[in-house]
Length: 452
Image 1 (cartoon, rainbow, N blue to C red):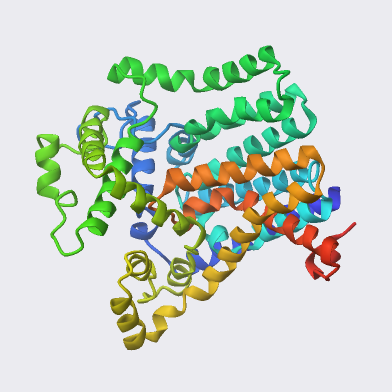
Image 2: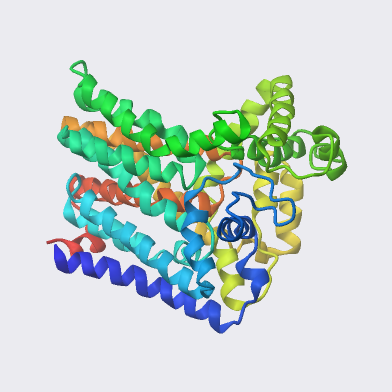
């Protein structure tokens, strides 16, 4: 096993370092490295190091809880030591490479070793994920905690050992302190217990697992209670509900009208000023406006949300990969095409393809992820017929987890959001191929090559 652990780790690390070298060779400036959410994380780290205030606001230093604390705290030593972004990228690459090792080491305890090794290698070499590991955002640290959290729960279902449950609880809590979405998955702890033990629920172990989770996140909850008089874990939910869900829903609902919710002036009206949206009380106003609009169009929003859930399994990230590595820009974005497809605006879709056939280029890598996702969901049906009882429970748990995750991140569904569940998708997909191979006796060379 040791040789394969080293193989997985160094393959993942070398590919990521290659992308880091290419990015540095292009000489990208601060605008690239601090794009998107990166500036917010770095701003918090700088204010923590300089002023001891948890805020991305460099002027007013107003405390906020928009971003959970672990990734900004991770950045603080690099800020204090004035380290290059390349050093941060290297450390993040080590973390993601370690997550690939977790996938192999923990996955092989439940699935066939050849399947676990193959899934770890696919995760290691997948290009868009390798690039994402170098971006100064929370995904790298999140994967490092989230992968063992999910697979320790899988191990608990498989073995019913309480230590696996406790490790999973601690890892899930650390993942929650890195990305707020993991906080919603606390329900996986009692769900894993229910699947593993049925009617004979070990209440003491379950309560200990939940206590471990809440004990780890409690400092952040206390900070929110003292600073904002609220036990809200993060203002991310309110902000994303407004900026992502409702803004896109309004465009889908009224494609011919000027959007109300995306207008900066209307946002100022909702907030009662222009001091920003990261503060908890201001984000709550956005969240309330978003929920009121959704409730007024509840059925249509349900349809919209369901239509956009598949984006998580279609978006590939290779356009961003190409633009980052080449230094150029393309017109290959498939997001407008997906919008035309789900709105059944087939005339416009056909016209775009006719005038610019090159926009179909991104659809080819999307087929890979569509196929992987299909095989992952197929695993539930294949294992139900063929595998032992515990494997059926594992498959039900993992497929159910993926569906809940897809529901939570809809309608955004970007590749960087799917990146954190790649280990689950790749493992289930390769095990589906293994079951099909054994059932229909066809050759699958990857599994044959990595077989012990």
